[in-house]
Amino acid sequence: MYNLGIYLMSLLIRLASTFKKKARLMCDGHKNVFKLLENKIDKKAKYIWFHVASLGEFEQARPLIEAIKKEQPEYKILLTFFSPSGYEVRYNYPLADIVTYLPFDTKKNAERFLKLANPHMVIFIKYEFWYNYIHESYLIGIPVYLVSAVFRESQSFFKKIRTPYRNMLSLYTHFFVQDEESYKLLLKHGIQKVTVAGDTRIDRVIEIQKQTANLPLIESFADNGALVFIAGSSWPADEEIFINYFNNSPDIKLIIAPHEINESHLIEIEKKLNRPSIRYTKLSENDSVNTDCLIIDCFGLLSSVYRYADIGYIGGGFGDGIHNLPEAAVYGIPVIFGPNYSKFREARDLIAIGGGFSIKNREEFNNIMESFTGKPELREKAGEVAKNYIFSNSGATNTILKHIF
Image 1: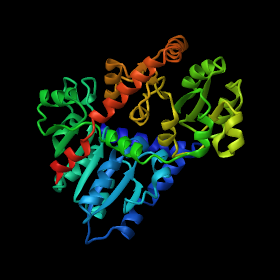
Image 2 (image 1 turned 120 degrees about the vertical axis):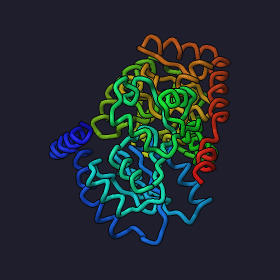
Image 3 (image 1 turned 90 degrees about the vertical axis):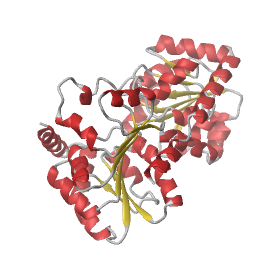
């Protein structure tokens, strides 16, 4: 059933490639993988293979890659992506010796990929469960680790009827999970090769915060005494909520970094705004003073932009789930997000301690914003709580590397 599912998925993506850019990029990328490995793999070198789904998981892998390059320079890094939205942004990541897509998880692809790459070890991030790659690695004795993992009782691994997919868990060399709940769940089902390490993404956002770039134009935009509200990785459902509040709140400045920055989405945002706005790529020093809303229409700035915020909003909570919450909280600001956050430990924890706030609709969002704007001491306290939480949960990278090496 699993192999049939992989076949159907690959077929659907190929069909979609005729009219979907992401699907076309993936299919084109898959065509070149094996040739790339044949030409670039150094047969005399030891490779550590990292596989991530997309950009978010890459940020979780990055602290490990950087630490390995610094502390274990004899290893080379092979980095693979599933999603074009990750590969197309990070295909030239300088600390990876080879960056490519991962072909679909068929037995034939797995055998060929592993024969060419011959990795010393495999590190998958969070939710990457590819049976054939893991099984073939196990058969030939390559250690496979799952990092920053989160497990829930509702997952297919833990159904009453034992399935081959559940048996895959026994093929991993070790699990590094984010929380005690995942640890206890795996133990309950007989998986004992588990360590509670936390989330490597926490280490990454702390490192970013220490090295944050100055952005003079954004600093000028933010430096006029008004509260600055920054919405990161926003989707249309998020924008319907916070743009309405912004349009009716002249004392607040808004920075939007949408998750998708295609032209149609940018135009859609601009149509919703009733106050002066400008795109970042068109911004000049004079414009930064005379506009109320700044739209970030390029990649790579959001992690630095949050430093100028008084309040942060994390998008995705009205869809599949919120995006990178720690990226904002590390700057000591309260974070607001939509209702779909249950898969994210940091969101649950921050709600419990008063640094994070979930909203279901426009009314709830307005109430929180009125509280923060009317009582700055509440806003500052919530921000301090959020920052302390991030720093107190660092260290996952060191824990993992000590075990692996």
